[in-house]
Image (cartoon, rainbow, N blue to C red; front, side, top):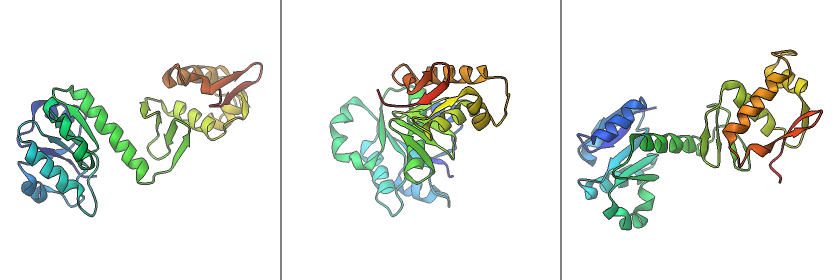
Length: 223
């Protein structure tokens, strides 16, 4: 995957801070013509375009990136409050925006989520159950668009539950099917991982993993 395109050159310090902290590769361009010359063979992985100083040139770049055979995505524009009224008529030129001033973490999070959604659109193998989406290629999971920070085994357990909705499993069966060990840490290993999964799913969705007394667990999104 290629680097991100950043406009303008030099880029705003907060943009540099956000991209560098998140270990993104990027190249800055002073205008659309230079951006075309800088584009690598593998293409741009996305773009961060600041409209703070020269909004006209900023949206020229956005239009150049989107109105082509293979549109660049994600494109995030950084705008001032005075630009908000104009965004509706330019909505096809970008995927998301940040209002200046912004926090570096906000920009990094928006880029990460947009990139993950773009991967889903491009056809990686996913498991989807209601608001839950699990990317089997990247080992990422999200609930209602919110990425979950899961360990490998938490991801595997959630994937197993989501692909077997409504079925009741004993702890021993889960150990055998998910951990692939008959006695890996004992049945309480399952309880610990379920507790952590529920916490990461959040209060609204923790009930998806239901405890069946004296038996085990069942995954169900029905109320």
